[in-house]
Length: 520
Image 1 (cartoon, rainbow, N blue to C red):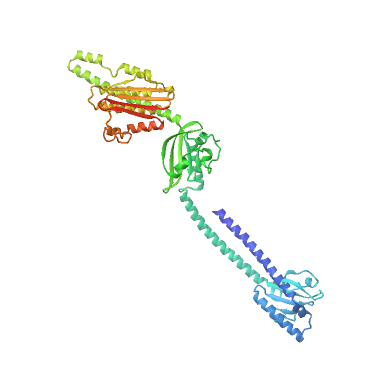
Image 2 (cartoon, rainbow, N blue to C red):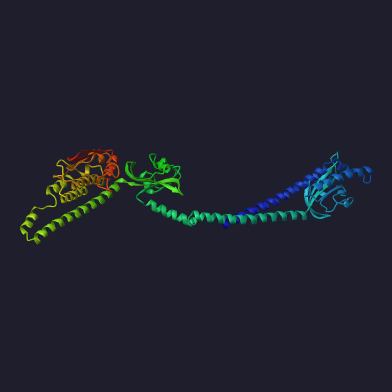
């Protein structure tokens, strides 16, 4: 604020100096022009050359006096006009009492000697003055007198004082207005900056920019017109841009023509887990609109390499599946141990021995088939866990003999496989557990090879009723009761994402066969 006030002060002083200088020049020009105007009049030549006291002289003097008096009255800046002959005798003076007396001041000799018109500082009858001199020439070009037009220095001082006071008043008003305006602006700026000074905000901006640049996730932010507001280092790396590239203010489409983010900035629709490709990298992204006081002002996108996300999901889902399998085994073992404990309490030692020898959690062949045909540990753990749970409910779950699943040949992420297979088996187990069918069996087939994947789940349940089948891909369509009915919706979303298909073959009282085909 202080530098601005100093600038206002210096500007005002410069304007004051310029105004005073201009006023001085204007005054000098005015008295010089007036002196010339008077000197060029024919009556003035007659006045200074004619013999005084004659009737003709009196007539000319009266005419000159009337003209010049009117001029002086009109031009308030002029204080004195004096018309003299070559002997410096006044033939006209603003004060008529001075007519006939000699010129006072001594600065008239140069003009009488033929000098060009000039301005001098002289002291006359009324005190110090600024004087303009101009020679009077007759028809032959000889000097016959001179005209002096002057402004009193006292009047000039008053005039200058008025100018200075006016500028001082303007300066005070400007300083006060500027102080009020700047204070209001700074208060508003501080509110806009959330209580931070510009320096504090700049420091926070740099800190946050550094934080954003160390993130593995890429980040775009654009305004409503698609211009880049923010792009962090990871985003520049994915777009093959040098780290020092200044992207702010440019259209995002300049660097990434395929982007859909400007559409989000116009529609305001949020999208999560969108899959696309940037420079050959599989990306998973979320796009979100940005609002300011309820007004849509832009959009932001957060994205990262899908390979990393899939690996993390597979590790997490694999761990969760293994934990669930162990819990199922523990539950099943506890049930078996309670049976053995009851037989021993009843002294049925032989029956307890036979029960121990004949009882297994699941068929060893089933476990062996799963381990042999499914190389993905997370998926294998899921199948074993479901087999144990099915066995506990009196349901036989087996893997089709011709199944094959090799992790290196698959393209569908492990967590997607687990979701599809887990929902298929869970639906079949639930159906069989709630039927009185004499034979309760589930047979699962998985066929994964490069370019194509098929999953088949057959059960011996009661089949899917027609009214449920017609709405099976709608949320809440189920026979399980409230809170269920999203399994087929989830499977359909995954299948649609990979441009696959689901085929359901069901017969009342015979069972259901569900086949999922994925062209990957």
